[in-house]
Image 1 (cartoon, rainbow, N blue to C red):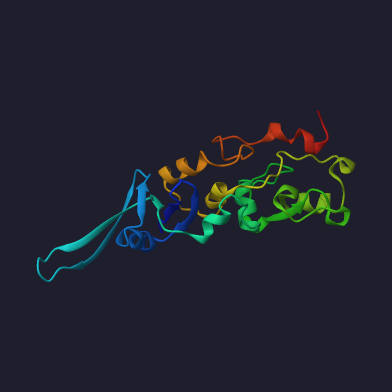
Image 2: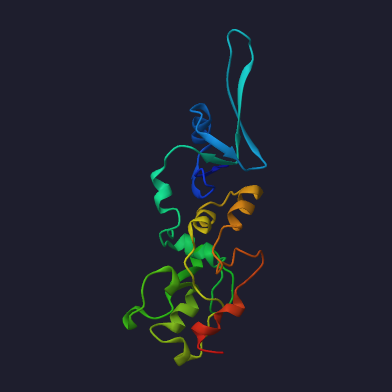
Length: 203
């Protein structure tokens, strides 16, 4: 189901809200401005007096005048979860490059936990099970494995992309211009391969 992209009055992305949540903002007159090219049409009941059905058009991207606690952490990184990690890496094993379904993917710590590796965005990548097992508890250089792209922490805008599969074109365009400079979503089709040199220990 289509969701509405909610912004603060300054245009910073805050959250996805339901169509009904968007309608409530309109009814409370808390819409500062709209930025989407598409409207979601909500139809209500029929007027007993006129016989006409009520219709409300909710823009796909709305900026609200309402104070939202979520806005305080808008620039923070989203929580690290496997679904978001796999989406960040485009369901690709960052060791062998194979694109696989979710059930065949794992979270791998580039620096093993036993060697001080942390469970955070910049330290983990998507890996297929064979590559994860091959790497095991080793450093990449020790077993001749290489990363195809550098792991990075998504910002709030990219986090919103990672958590919603049904993003409208105008919403994606808006969010993509606000993702971090290291994001592979910043340039459509970019795979980040050229950025992996430092973590692989090469020039």
